[in-house]
Length: 167
Image (cartoon, rainbow, N blue to C red; front, side):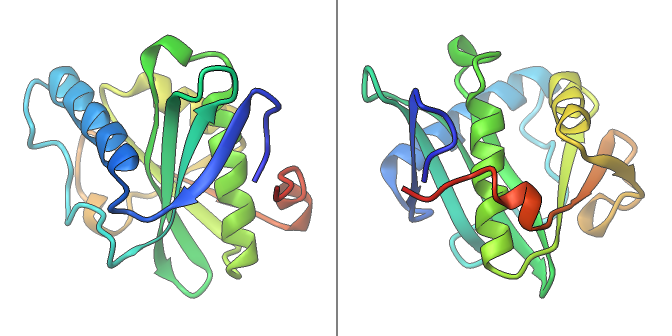
């Protein structure tokens, strides 16, 4: 799948070692930001509930630069999980490309609403989701009642999903 001419975005299994390394880097960064490893309400995503997991590779170097997944919440709703971009590539469109690819995959699965959550120390993540067309919603699921949690939602349709072409 292709959303950015500088990237190769590939669907991989949750257990893929490259994806696992990127998720570990994200969690280490969040642990440092939050000052604790106890910053994720509810069960962490897993192979059992993540329907799609993508890894973005830089075409020039072949290096992995970002990732993201979709946790299915119900027949028509999925949550973005583990959307992460290596710090040195931030601002280059990697996150937007991964998000667009996730939206296309969600639409293909019959998902019509995607949700996301960002914590209090993730101001960059909150700004990213807002810029990508997500609107604030009441905290849902494991985030309900969590003070440092900000939840978002975005409807997706064939127009938003059409921005991503499958390779």
